[in-house]
Structures are given as structure tokens and as C-alpha cells.
Image 1 (spheres, helix red, strand yellow):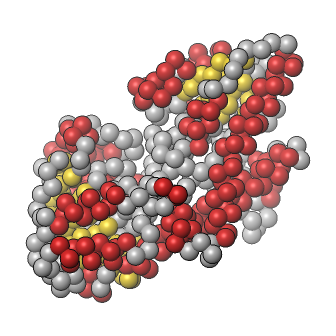
Image 2 (cartoon, rainbow, N blue to C red):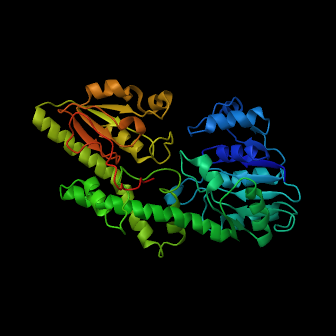
Image 3 (tube, one colour):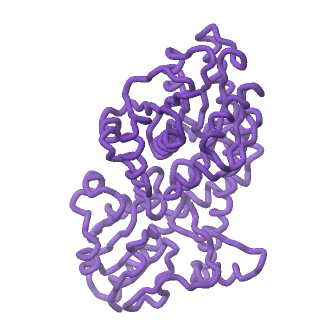
Length: 428
């Protein structure tokens, strides 16, 4: 197998294509967005990820990778397209089916089709059935179909593509073995071969586990806030117990995985997923609690200052720290809601989201960090971006920190980094 075609050049597909090219494959990246393809071929990555530009420049210069809006023939096709939530929180598999239909037209005997997108249990078998019905190929003999769910952490994608363990689930054993051979060329973690439903369920269980853990952190935060106790100090103290490790509460759960994937299980097994349903409810309520707390602080500020117009600086829009990804971001939804407040000036800043994108979303509300700090009466930190770790605020400004930075609980002039002893792990 010499050529790979990666279908979908997003946060997972593009880094995967680059790593495969750096390990000897000739890779064609296929995407339906011509602007994205043009940027990639100019070595201008359309997404933010450490090492991405340097690695992209390298594989383009070596002629082992290029992007195209035309799907080529290939030895192996890796599908890495979005699977967002559709109506009634069901999985929207439109992109997966469209990618499969496009691939079917170019299939040749011996080809391997690998689905990396996170999907409900049974989807890979369904794709194999589609291929069988629309071609004369026998899956497991002429064509090989498998599911290998991605397991990457934004901001560490390249390291994790190479070093994380992988599960390859085949429609047949031969499918799993053929697909595993593709990954052995660039994955240094262990590769286990299972059935396709096993691999699909593993991925959904992994992200559901994270969602439940985050829900506990948010539930603890809500209890602490109700009791007028600092939730971060409480969790920090609880985590000194050798068998307790509560995550850091934030403003909610976002991203393309943790906020989405549990619904695939809930929809398929509604009577067997009560814990997952409760976790989703807790995490979905968190942004509303942040908005309520912010409004309470706004009311308190007006009482103390005898004024009506208050300026709130909202820091952070992405779903997690130090990335540019806005998908399912609770911070984005909070900022959009606060912009509807009457007699309130809302300023927005995120150092990782391109200026033009912020202006598309918020227009005149967008501000530079320094000018926003000068104007703000209330500073609301929603995302723990690196540039927010050493803010300088005046004693008259109110700080609301829902990011987990724990800058300084007394809200005085200088805000130091978190303590050096054991810290709660960051949430998604």
C-alpha cells in the first residue's frame, strides 16, 4: 500500500494526512471546500495546531502530500469527516454517507476504507453494506472496511497520532488486519484488532466517561457556589485525598466529541444510559449557571456604584484553552447571550480566534485585551488561554473566573499562576 487518500481535511484529517506523508505514504487530501484546499496547498493551514505549519510545509515541499477537491483513486481511503448532532440529538451522518458515496465511484479491488469519524454503533457495518450493494465487491475479500476512531487531544495532535494506542475494528477479521497494517507504518502505540461495533462502542464509552467526570466537577462547583465556598479551593483540597481526582470545573463542555458522543449512546440505548443522560443535563446547565452568576454580579455592581451602565469584558470563546476551535463552545454561547443584556457594554476578546471571525460573530463588541481591561468593570474569564494567566486588574474591578485559572481569589492587583502542588486536571 503506497497511496492514501484522507477524506476531510479538518482538525483530525489534515494532521493525519501529514503524519502519514512524513512516514512514507504518498497522500492526497480530499476536501469539498476549495478555499481550504487552496490554503493547504499554499502551506497556510486553516486551523491552529502546534507544529502544523512546519509539518505541512515539509510534506508539500517533499511532494508526498497535496490537497484536492477531486477525489482520486487510492490504495486506502481514510474518512475523517464531521458527525455533528442532528435533529433530536441524533447523529447526523450526512457527511459520512456522502464521503462513502464518493469513494465507491473510485474503488478498486484490494482497496481499504477506514472510517475514523466517531459514529453510532453499527455505522461501519452499514457502510460496508452500502459498498456491497453499489458494487460487485465482496467486503472482506475484494474490499476491506474498518473503523479506527481517532484519539487525539487538541494542541497535542501530532504527538498523539503517533504515540497513542489505537483500536481497529473490522467488518471482518481480514478487514481489521488489513487496516491495522496501514497504521503500523506511523503509529508507535499498540494497535489492537477488534470488531467494528467494538471499536465504535469503545470510542463512545471513552468520551462518555470524560463527560461524566466533568459533570461531577460541575456538580461540585454548583454545590460550593450555593454554599458560598470557592469551588476551586474546595476541589483542590479534596484532591489531596490519595484516591480523589476531581476535574477542574469550567463554563461548560464543548468540542466535537465530549459534548456530542454521549448522545449517540443515549439515542441508541435510552433505557440503559441514565447516568449519561444525567451527566449531559448537568453539563448543559453549566453555561446557564455562569450567565446567572454574571447577572447577579452585574446587579451587585450597580447597587454598589449607583450606576446603570456596566462594562463586562468576556475573555475566551473557544471550547478549550489554547485552540481556535469554536465547535459546540459553551463560552461562545455565553458571550452571545450576554450581548443581549440591556444597559450593559459587552466587550469580547479571544487571542486564538482570528480577528475577522470574531468580528463576524460579535461586530463592534470585539476588543483588544489591553483596551478591554482598561474599560472593564467586570472581567469574566471563560477559557484558560495562556495570555490570561498574568492579568493585571485594579482593586475596583470584579473578577469572575470560570476558566479554572484560579488567578487570585481576593481579586486584587496581580494574579499569580496556580499553586505548584497537585492541581485538578483540565476538562475538555
